[in-house]
Image 1 (tube, helix red, strand yellow):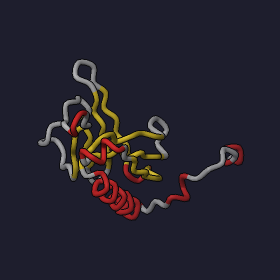
Image 2 (cartoon, rainbow, N blue to C red):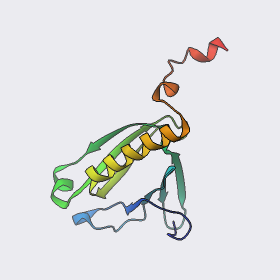
Image 3 (spheres, helix red, strand yellow):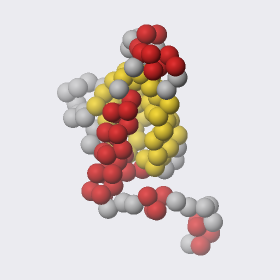
Length: 127
């Protein structure tokens, strides 16, 4: 995730002991998507479109609160990545609020509402 290839609004690394970023998991958010890149030798990069995100939950353990980190659990309508965590990042409340605002902006820009993602599984039989 080179800074020169995209216009990131936010980026961070997963943090472990004492809130230090000693991992190979990187997170980034652009105006349209969230990117998650993991690994050093074998790498994996996931891309989740913001308008597909349904819900955010902030989780903070005692040690995360002590080190100023937290984990954001995300539910999305993306088929390959329905649920994922943005783990152990700095300023998690600010990031959650920023991502929530970005999701609403992207939905408004694309004229997408949350109702379009809500199905009970029986809808497919109607067509």
